[in-house]
Image 1 (cartoon, rainbow, N blue to C red):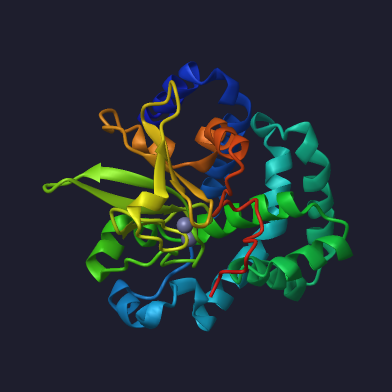
Image 2 (image 1 turned 180 degrees about the vertical axis):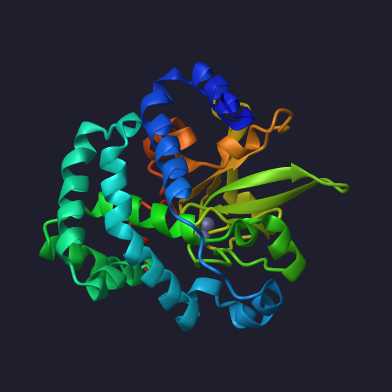
Length: 297
Ligand SMILES: [Zn+2]
Ligand SMILES: [Zn+2]
């Protein structure tokens, strides 16, 4: 039996057939990791305010970061091995080799080395990650994809939910849970106009942010912001910043049938990123990309 959620995806793929292969695989991959990995126990929600004061994301607190990195390391081999075992999750050819190399590395690596890998991801240490990939002949993109998939599955749903962060008044331009830059935004109708929320590509947390302006560089001069409305995709637009030349994919649909959840996945609208790159704009926040300017805290 298919869940209501899967039916939504089926309808989406019917309209976006060219995405069925890549986005369909990503969807199955994320679901599968969530099935086989249990979230870690986070500190009580009452403590989050104190933990995130001065803008420190939850997972940048040393103790919690180590706890999550340890749990991720313990799951690494099991997760990548289970991916190979799952026949309905046939790896795309390009990925099969690099996942096999990761499996081999994870099978023989010291627990400390695996933990270090996840610490590098959580700290967004691009140089360190690149060095690790080179030293062990591993594909960086696959490391990021698998690594963040595991990390995301370890974050409890309550921490990803926007209501927690609305309550705490987190309005920064980076994820309150892991500290990544947003990969896309969502506009929702509220009593007075619309409110904007940002979405993390790493741990999939959603949090509130200022309604206008660039979520990457903080530019608030609206004369230096443009909106690109792609043809045939009314639910999405690209907010372009002339100051830092980045764009932010933004869901502006009505969410009548709960499709916002689909659009909150970066890979569901990869076709819109082509539009951005054709205009020489910079994509930010994707787990597959190095954070470029090292803007992490
Ligand atoms: Zn995050
Ligand atoms: Zn900007």
